[in-house]
Length: 59
Image 1: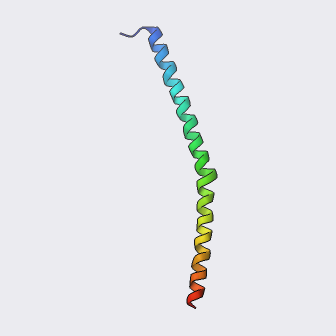
Image 2: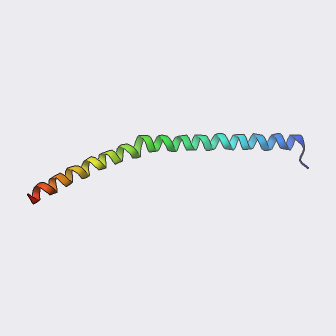
Image 3: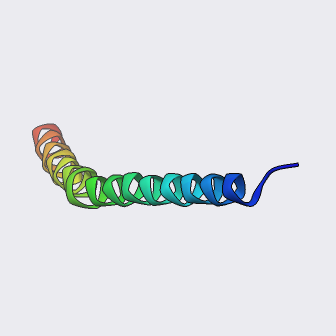
């Protein structure tokens, strides 16, 4: 059976682990929001321009 001190230590480390995971997840969300989404918007614009260019070459 675990002592009360061991339970507090375990709870502390679980709380600490949760805090670290929250920071990691927040960082990933910001990275996706600030980097990947704008990059896909630029890619979409570029592909639309290339499509228009290709269609005009066929006309």
